[in-house]
Length: 358
Image (cartoon, rainbow, N blue to C red):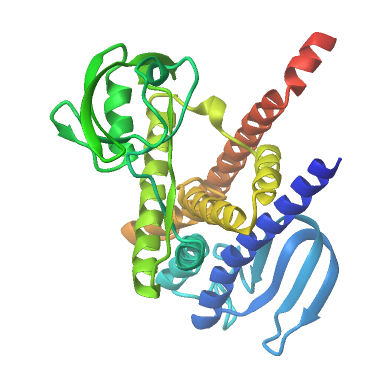
């Protein structure tokens, strides 16, 4: 019961932070471009707490904490009025509309950079040198008598600079005999190691059976910011790779996680401490920003697609075409929610329990 309560509270807090910064991006740029913002809500449904700012915006914390929104004057009136009111979204220029819509996802990416930079300045930037943190029992590493604390200097003629270099070689060479140059207690020696194997996504990959040793190094503000930008770029690149595999190779569909899975992970990470929780928020913020940039109608990326078409054709997309696109987008998102919820319930054992019950 305690774990469930922690998961729920962590999920609400994490989601609230992500949604707040996403909508804050829309809000700030809308105000900067002269668009009147009528309401800013964290959550949906009845307002639990509300107040009106001097700008006229009604700020609300609502009962259902599963999202949020910014209500701009004239939003959705593009095709319904020929004389938009001054200060309305419908009356803004096409470039202003695009900037306002893109500001939400970009705010999430900016939040990730700030969080990573803060972590690197306080907890330190994590790195994984090619040093064995631990050896898995009955593994290829154990059979070769490798020890925790061993540093891999080279594999064959390839120099090893960090743990990822070692992972790449091991993964690409299942069931192979490789010569490891090992540093141990100030001495170097060469050991022939027979790599094991494992199955991943239907492919056979190499498996050694070791775990990395993570080192944390605190950085000054400027290096921390540079490292944070690089870390955010690495996450974006990895996200793009996995998304490409999902779309074109249909790999990873079973690994998609929905709200239930995120809540479970949030609770587990929250138990590890503030640094781990902040790191999770940064990763989720990147994912939220990138998902919203996918050109699916109903998402921010879908609106940007409409604006791009309008910019190229020099005329507004017909309202009927917009409606069809939005319905398609809604159906696609609903399908994705069903798939991720099924995956989450399967991981929790609920699907197997229900199948057994039936």
